Image (spheres, rainbow, N blue to C red):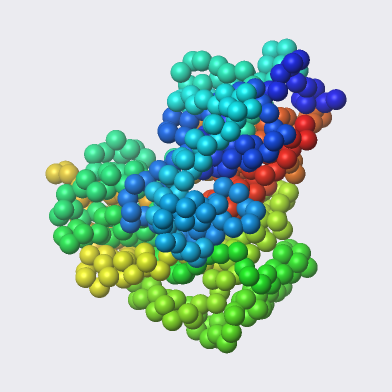
Length: 494
């Protein structure tokens, strides 16, 4: 027996789950559903309330999931568990609907409470420790498992560890890092209460035009605020009215496996494959693919065009997105992460706007704010400097025009989880231990950590955003649910 698979005599194991958000809840949900998994104790370590996390911890009803109910679920078998949960509580929803993220947070929270009861009935105590993990190292004696050190100075003994932390550190542009404590700099759009608290006559500049920036705009835009979004591309996400499992899969995965991503002909072959998939997915006659996208150079005009196309049902491409995400994850699983990242960067311009498209309801709100003069979208990022009387001076290039903004909101997304395998510990956590160049911790096909050497995989599983070494698209609850099934099966088999 591999020493890493040894158990303490007479125990079912002590499981420590690092992180308590949706990915961690998916893992615990699978463990509770699997009768062969019977740890003696489960400890969840997260400073936030368990079940919520950053993505679903908001209470603002304007902030909706950009994935449909059908694929926003803690497990993947049969009907969406979220749909079952909401329908059972009287919410009139369908599998295609985009619901407020607060509802998904409450769903995760209630399922967490149910799991606690289920595990307790098996003799397993489930508790939460409100702290952050600093490191995971091997126990002093071989075969004794792991020692998990926390930022409050305490430690936890574990026979098994699941790492399910998300990326909660905003990407703050380098030019602003020396001004991190500036009172008029908001390093990220969450919690949204900070945005709502800004004065009604505020004139904030939002750095970013993707999903985090969209959330910021939806919260900030009021009758008197003047909001500007900006990014190097100046592009907003595309618009969709559903993201569901396909009724008729098109065979995208099989098609991808026939392609050679190192071939100079790859881009053309991939485009042909996607066009064919969109045609197959359309339930009936649909417009030519070129007429399913806006072409205007100005972002709000393009948004208006794509909103009208979506409302008219002229965007068959949305029917293949869920299958495409699954196919990309399966096709690139196990690739060296640098090869996979180079590949994704190569065709990101072709599909990124559509994988991360926004719900039609959010697009309507943005379009209305734009028509009312409350929202502007600009291409480029200005040079910023604190203004003497408060706020920020921004100089736009190449025209050189200077403008004043009352606040700057950094909304360019979040950094990957700060988890690395450098140093003496099996895993080190936190920005002090990990640099921006750290590679995601390597895992095997069962998501188990595989540090250098010949000792075999550890009894440490990496899931959700922390499992980025093997999975291309991780910010997707449907992906975390699949990973949770793998963890539960592996624990049960062990």
